[in-house]
Length: 142
Image 1 (cartoon, rainbow, N blue to C red):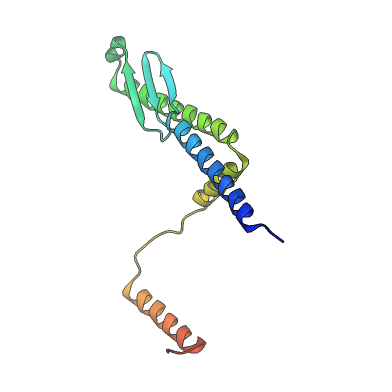
Image 2 (cartoon, helix red, strand yellow):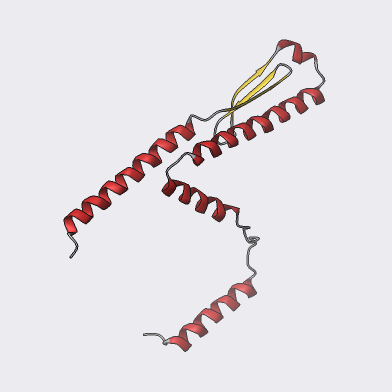
């Protein structure tokens, strides 16, 4: 026979452990920064890839706009890749239960979304007709 109070305490402890691990991982992820520097242009990004710091050396201001644009875009792309690799390393060190959830979340978000387009009036009417026809065949209206 199962000792219910002991089982509940065990589950509550497991839940507290998962919550603690999740909060710890979230705070560590929030502190992640990716950086890249090229010829006097430095870009730093947060875990979302948003720029948190941008430094441009005075000599860079003599570059053409195309050169500066290329350097900024390159730095930003590489800083985001740096942050992404740091997040992946952090996730690989997480508890197995959290790793499973991260994997599950990644596969869900990687699934191709169906193209979303507004339905025409005819499509809406056909969907309504199908629903009500199916409803009537199953059990009728009560």
